[in-house]
Length: 96
Image (cartoon, rainbow, N blue to C red; front, top):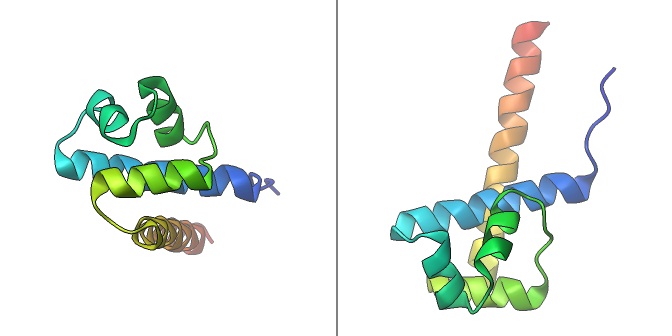
């Protein structure tokens, strides 16, 4: 039986996907988002790939740059996680 990745890894991946979706929805490059959020461009890339864990300060900077609340950004992350879990369940069910 395969082991699941740590919850922090999954959470950071889902958050990264949410950041990427918001950024692409605005038509922004990582560089432009970094400017708007006062963050480093390479850090934006790490966040989007799930290789970095955002602090509350980073969450606030990103939400402000996107023009949404922090809770909206987090709830979008949660929807992505729930969607991924549903897709995993469907694939598991089909394989059985």
